[in-house]
Image (cartoon, rainbow, N blue to C red; front, side, top):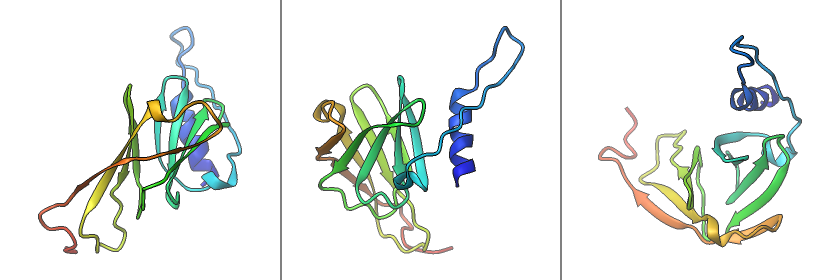
Length: 140
């Protein structure tokens, strides 16, 4: 898993130098709470990450892989978060995983960045956007 993390950071930090196509690899031993990352989203000079077993926590990292904010989503009962995305105003967490093929609904949790402040630890309330697919819960 650590190699996967390094690979993700590598993909985000690849740079072309003088048009030569040289690449640089940035490696970082991430904290144990980020042992299994399910989603990464670049947001300016930061990365937002969600872990597979996140227990309602989203992490903001600097581009060197240091945690700069830990956000607990107080109302989120994540089942299997697998994706994260950001725009100028919000963080979106896709709680869409279904390893057993038994879920009857999915959800996207939308968190307002303006509610996070600058402290290392923050708590936020996320808006739950629930949805289903026509054949939800039917294993094919």
